[in-house]
Image 1 (cartoon, helix red, strand yellow):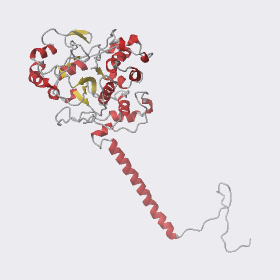
Image 2 (tube, rainbow, N blue to C red):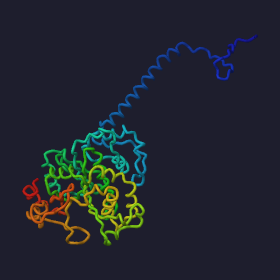
Image 3 (cartoon, rainbow, N blue to C red):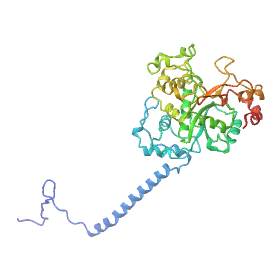
Image 4 (tube, one colour):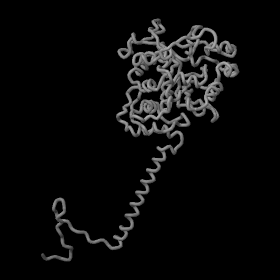
Length: 412
């Protein structure tokens, strides 16, 4: 072929479609040298950036961020746990156990939403040896308060006289925005949980109870859970209370069938068919339960949504939800009584309250079962006179006489 001075076309047999492709002229030698130098530098920079990013992630997840890192969960695309069941199968077991393996946080505060909190608390280790809870475990004291804790000095004496912090843990739910200021030496220091507003007689009270339970369940060392108010006092030393609860075969949830308008009269047809009138029960709000029952309660998506929708005043969720549901699902696991004493003898919507003029030696000795007519109840299938571990309602003015008499009568 006759041709001019252009480059010859060469057929590239490796081309996908077999068309002729013109070869580009060879690049200058200086450009080749530049590529040989720049490529390794860029590769090194990319690898270094990836390494630093991975180290930062490990630092954050490994607890380098302080106590709050115990609660730092991944972003969860989960539905409202009050409406739909948490799906454990969609979560990698290793990832969940990473949360369980962490020690209890020094602060009860965290950045989880209610949905994330109840979702995380509803998981329980299933593999043998996954839970390394030291027997017999701790009792979690759950304080549902409006704000101040006026009887805190008495409770601090109760906790500090136990001989060790391995017996208990403390959680407080207060009015949102209220901050309790306790020194580091106090068992109440930094034990507030994120809270929401509650109103007497409304479902928000039970929401707060579930919030307390869920926070306490995040610590695997907690085995028993007792709900208290700011007006409660302990009637016995902590070691005795701890032994009584951790050795019990039952959860202390009061449940009885009240045929009056204040019992069956509060039943709502909107609860059917999940809950029937025959299953309807009433009981005290102030419960105590073991870990198995507590996990069931925070994960309940069958009964609680019905109660939220149908049980409106004068149907009170806090007096009917736990007694009814636990009677249905675990009748043999509840004692059908409370361990918190209260005086309803004066009538009305609220129990009797006790102030400075009511607290004396004889009164406390009677409450502690040391004098007068003693209570009688069943404990682990056997009759006993030790039935009440706590008592309410005590006014702030009762603090001083309680402090003066607690060592002598209550033995703490």
